[in-house]
Image (cartoon, rainbow, N blue to C red; front, side, top):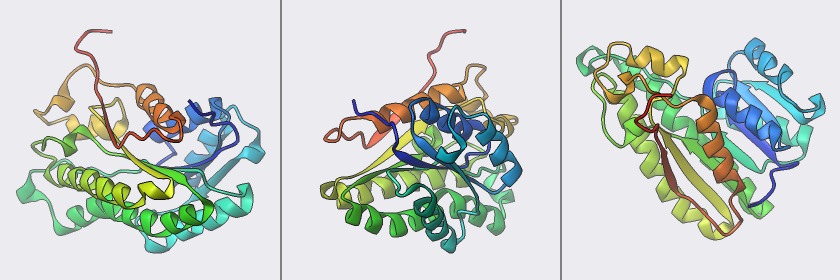
Length: 243
């Protein structure tokens, strides 16, 4: 498996939960990391606890649902760290409501963050990776994208669309030495999933959940795969045992 030492990885939604865990595990592998989220204070808190020299960490406050954000993230990263090797689309939004109570604004918020932001990422990052000679994009999806969850119809649809969208684009760029992978965790012990599952009768209400570190370890596996090995879609689920 390849080393991640000195590779530059951008992680969106990095101010908490899975994103912060991904950053921590990448830092342990020696990757230089770029932390992206809306809240600068939280980003700085995550950055201060990473086992890396501060010169190898960059924090960028940004709203990735805005079309100009990805270009700015790329520009600031390349100026500070010289390149981008891996981009992890981890930021996600979910709103737990019955469909008839879901507003157009709710729907747009979910799709703009969970899908349209990835569209912006592909549009800006793929030409850069083609010129560079390769790179990797890892999109964090959800098991809800494989089996729709009651009360999470818009969220489930956004993740299902992300899965198919990623697979289609992956086929377009695989011969350019660009890997596009999707990781679909089952219910994970994060603030987002706790809030989403509170009133749900879905599998997310199960007592046993993945930890953020278990999800991050799966991201590390995808990132460390040898150059010629490509996992297009990976599911990660908890075993049905008590810890």
